Amino acid sequence: MKKKEYKDRLIELLNEGIEELTTDQVIHKTKLLIFEYEKKQAYSTENKGRPWTDEELRVVLSFAPTKENILKLGQRI
Image (cartoon, rainbow, N blue to C red):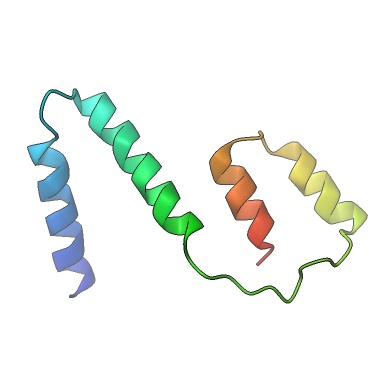
């Protein structure tokens, strides 16, 4: 599937919504589903157990402790 087709299908699904949910609730549910999908993806473990540098720790501590940020920073890509 091409990017444009994917985008169009996703927008179409979002526009259809979910029964008995408001637009805000559909957006929230979609974000949770994307987070769950991302969590299940395989990531490189080459940095596992490696100590953090002072600069990396400063960056980590500057982010809010949200699920999304934890996942992003935990990957250390």
